[in-house]
Amino acid sequence: MATTAETPLLEEHVMDAVDHDGLVADRSNTGRWTAAWFIIGVEVAERFAYYGIASNLISYLTGPLGQSTAVAAANVNAWTGISSLLPVLGAFVADAFLGRYRTIIIASLIYVLGMALLTLSALLVPISENKEVVSASPSSLLNVLFFFSLYLVAIGQSGHKPCVQAFGADQFDEKDPREQRDRSSFFNWWYLSMSAGICLAIVVVVYIQEAVGWALGFGIPCVFMVISLVLFVVGRRSYRYSKSRHEKENNPFTRIGRVFFRAFKNRRLSQVQTELEENPSHGSPEKLRFLRKALLTPHASTEEDNVCSVSVGDVEDATALVRLIPVWLTTLGYALPYAQYMTFFTKQGATLERAIFPGVKIPSASLQVLIGIAIVLFVPIYDRVLVPFARSITKDPCGITTLKRIGAGMVLATFTMVVAALVESKRIQTAKEYGLIDQPGTTVPMSIWWLVPQYLMLGLADVLTLVGMQEFFYSQVPPELRSIGLALYLSALGVGSLLSSLLVSVIDLVTGGDAGNSWFNSNLNKAHLDYFYWLLAVISALGFSVFLFVSKSYVYRRVDGV
Image (cartoon, rainbow, N blue to C red):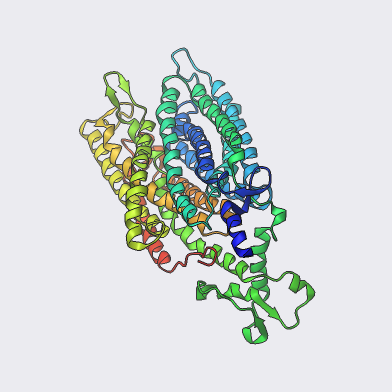
């Protein structure tokens, strides 16, 4: 009878979470889609703010700040790379000390400060009456203020980005079958909504930056970041919060770090010399048996050894983290092509015919909206049509495994680079035919719509790979480290951007810079972006080949013994 009486309690409450008042979370009044839509709204406003700056940043660097194409592209890639790497630090602070909610609040305040200073830096750039920059190179002080503000935004994003998405996914209880399916859909709808915010930023903010002014173009994203913070606080009573750190046995980093320490300490021990605890895990590859030595208890064990002992669950969690490393490394093959759309795709478009009506030109960065459009159109088809169909065949709640989803996007990214290379070859050939090689200021008589396929293909690849990476890294880390899991996905994109920046700098140096036959000559009619795109296609294809090998041997982390 006692068991029967307790069953409704388990059904009505989420035992691993609390509400805003610190009580056990009520399943019907907290979390799920009500809370998730608040958090999705926060992300839409934040992404609007971020892409209001990032999408056209290369134009600001080559315009008001007077940088060359290669230097500007390297700076954009460096900033986006660091912006995507810093979330690892922000996630660590959240998971180990502050918790996700407090980290999001603090990070948002830093974010708003960075954007306010960025707007101030744009206001201080001298502009003539015809809206042109007075000097080709602003003062060193203005440059310092601009880059300080820009990297302050990166610091703010480091706590905001991984924690908001993890906090949103936390609103669904993975122990409940229905909520587990909803959580899988959450990642799809999260990315769709986020892309809608990005599209709005690209269409509205980029136009204002080029048609009205950069100060207003940076000020509007700042206002949206304030809206994001207010919206997040307003929804606080509907959220489910993870239990406080003092209610848990150990700091997760201490618990998992102890596994590596004990395994190294016991590296010379064998099963004959020790009493090995029973290990019910059958998913650990033989090559990771080293970590099982953390379970060994020497006959001459001390009281300190017993206090610092580890459990089978600790070893399984440590093993799960180690297994993520080769997967993470192989996703860099996708991150390199992904880094190009905010730099060279935009510069390509700037050289083409951009008139959509007589006297009306679209900013070249606005074409990035096509990535968002592809995502907005494809996510509902994927979530409501393809997933149920695949689920009926594979019996997998997600339709297909997350690794298969990631791999499909990597293949599509490779073909995206092939298409981009062919279009760029066509653009250069057109410039030669019309004698425009030495006239970089003259528009190449070729429509900007030639770039549409590469943008749409990259959008479809994002739906597969990026959403797949989000769900994969979130679900394959221990529950206490899910901010870190999403930071791992972001860090892959960050390293990809940094590698792209390094690759651009090295190739530009080797091929002679603007004075030689650089692939990235500021005069794009003399450049060879097509060679660069072919190189990225090869790198992406090689990355997918290694990914295929790694994914075949990957063993998914078990959830609650399933």
